[in-house]
Image 1 (cartoon, rainbow, N blue to C red):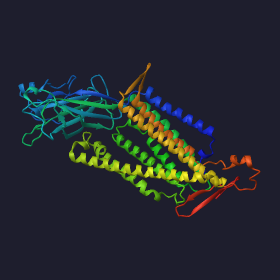
Image 2: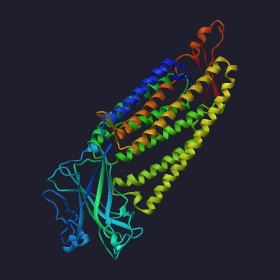
Image 3: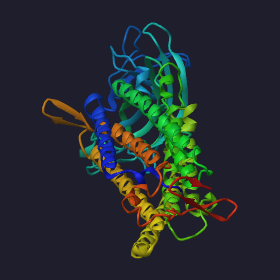
Length: 541
């Protein structure tokens, strides 16, 4: 790679640029922490027990828990037994959102968690490996007077994981089991104002359906959606960053095309990194506000996977191109052993995502974790991806070790080198150490802020201000990796400044007539290594 801007940039200019990037980084955290609300809002619902009084079940009939057309309700199952109402005629109804509220497309997604309230009884205990069969329907409407339109209907099974904290005796009857929450539903868009869930727990003793699941008293749901205020801030930030990365990417590639040589592998990889960052930045989410695009969550996962795969590949190739071991490089095929685990691990995660969110495009109640086979399959994909990540980490550590070992060897021989060769190796060493420092800083900040966002209560009070830590984490880390890619493309773009001008200005008398050279090894696909000699006047190929 020819001399980069970072090698010719004065210390003063480099410091100024670093300060400017840090200011933008601070703005990214402030935008999320002080301007945006929390990222998500959880809302808890308790299902209303409605009675289906029709003799024959009507699929088009929906039961409303409140309002002018509310259903016939019962308070508890003791009342149902007194009125001789069968379990198959009880419908658990949940209206989303709560009364006097509306859902909005700005909420982007909706995740629903289910939890059973199950009482202990000696003659009706939860059996080991008990599975609850759920007959669930989802409907929507956009005003309070229209009929409900069915959106999805499914028979789902969820394995119960409950434990009783007291002894199983007659004296403890009525105590509630401690049951784990169950994944229930996920919508990739919230394009309607009102949603209605009707849940049945059909009982069939002959087929062992919903037998041995204990005495269910109530069903609780928790819906989680993205805050509309955070969505607007997020969209605005993505729009600004898209333009910024697109401009620097065009500028970067223009400088490469002005060089009198074809682009080398490292320059191509940096461009690919910029393209992947632009791809994840493009704010196509603006269209999801007006269109019912249920695939946006899956599309977002794919975009993130492409970017992180490209970022990991960039680190491998960057280390390889700075090994200074005289090995013929500048070919992507050389790095297949290191990049292979990245591609394979990303593919495993993509298959895992398709098995879950891909199916949820047609059935929002599907969960790959609901069955033993699905759980084992999901764990297999995750374990394989984890193994690939470990292999990648070992490869990367090995390559970084090789580079630093070579750096140590070159440093001892730098004084004996010619001025042009010494400048070349000093530039390589500085470029590599600078990127390693910045990369480690970004990775450390990502881990630190992730831990903070997980262990804190979601916000901090700072005087009269409330800092939303989770929002600051999302906007700050997202802005940080954009600034990282921006800095890489700017600082590692080819420099048009002639090597040796400043260094030789003070000793032109001693070096008069001497050709100032910079040797840059460029290995082409066909194998031979060419030497580019840069004189004080013009670069000749």
